[in-house]
Amino acid sequence: MNRLNEYRIMWVLVFFDLPTETKKEKKAYSDFRKKVLKDGFTMFQFSIYMRHCPSRENAEVHIKRVKSFIPEKGHVGIMCITDKQFGQMEVYYNAKEQEKAVGAQQLELF
Image (cartoon, rainbow, N blue to C red; front, side, top):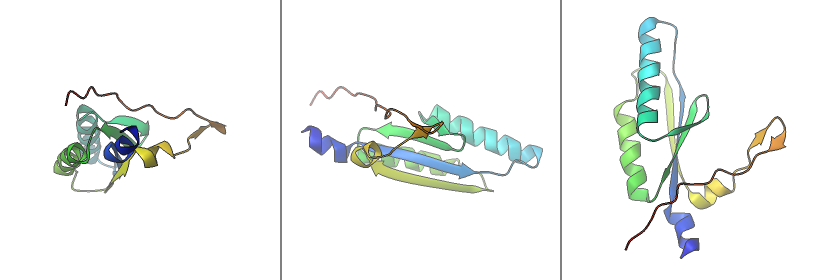
C-alpha cells in the first residue's frame, strides 16, 4: 500500500518570474505570492513554491486555483510530480546535502 501511495501522492510546484518595475507590477507580484501562500504552498526558493497533495484530484484543484490568479505579466510555470519523484530530488545548501522534506501526513479513514 505504501508503494502505491508514492505514485498517488502528488507535489505541485509553482515557479514564477514576475516583473516588479512599476508599483502596479509590484502589487501584482505581492498579490500572487500571498494567494499562493494562502492556498497552502510553502516557499522552496524565492520564486519556487511547493505544495503536498494527497491525490492527483486534489493537486488539480490547487493547480486550477493557481491558474485563476496568475498575473497578466510575467512567467509562471506549474509542475506536478509524484511523491516518488519528489523523494528522488537532491537538495544542497552551502554545498552540503540537506535532508529531504517530509510530506504532510494525512489520516485516511476509508
